[in-house]
Image (tube, rainbow, N blue to C red; front, top):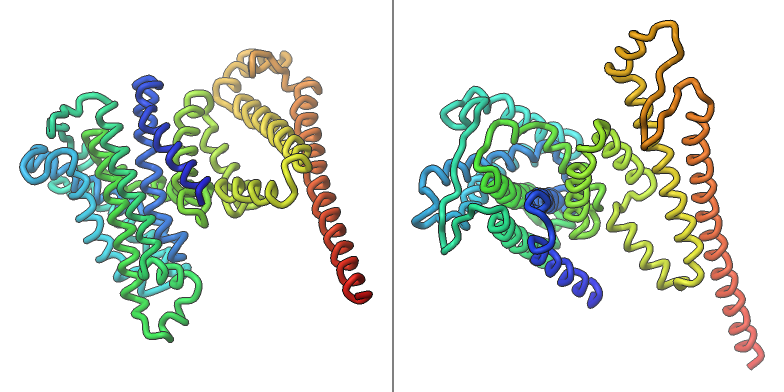
Length: 428
């Protein structure tokens, strides 16, 4: 627990120091990472802790965003709702709309619950462009950040610190919620709702409350998005936003409190860094999600937890070869996979087909990739990624076999020690 707190404090200190180290462009990316982290943590309250898989959480993010942008235009960032407190408008409207939608959605469970949440989000996405008075049509609604409390909020740095303050306060409140009796009942809602009902609890009321609280913090995230962008339009209700929060939450890990925040921050940075390098970055995101679900169902946070458990159980000296083989295998497999994806993306692109048609009858033109040119008809072109995948697979196999051998040796030693102790007891 002490190490966990130390890690959290170090992370907060790094976030506070971030604007002094990075450029304004990276600070803007960090704002998006913080908003995505809060949105994923709010979603995890409903999905990970209460066990209710929602496919339409963008609806509450969008409602909070539009409530905030109307508050910005209505009060002008002064009076009882100055600019730093504007996300409260998103929180109130998110809570109200979440309570309303949650009352209907939580009437059902499982697949039917997920379908109702999806239908509500699709309803909002379809209605928003037509309700121009409320959502501004396709152009959306614009606003301006007004000075308050001695800050003009004209720079990305001031917006970053405002976002960071709201995210830290919200995450603290979400964490404290898990320690309350209602927070404990939320886990019970996931584990066995029938037993809760048998014990006399109002399961539907509890479900609606959890749904509304999750929507409230999603509304705060939407409000922070509007303060950063100074505008909102119906794209905030897009299904891709609901999909992204599900992917980010599960990639980070739903069983660890900060897991969804970690996953959202990493995937947002991944999209920011990789989207300029390749057109296939969404494909990489999908591949990563599939691999995490197949081989790391506890997410990235669970991976760190497993590594810590293994280190405490077997020691770092025994595990060093396992980690070396695992890291080398992962790097080689990633390199081989990236080579194939990028090469095929270029091979089947319209630009390459146009070039190939101009030289009809001649050999297929080479494809530039990673600083080299590769001919699609050459065996060397296909040998390189195949070799990377084969060698990476061998390293991954050795890593797995080495870990099994360590576990077997430890089990054998413990069994032998138990037999010796039992023999001494019989002799005595």
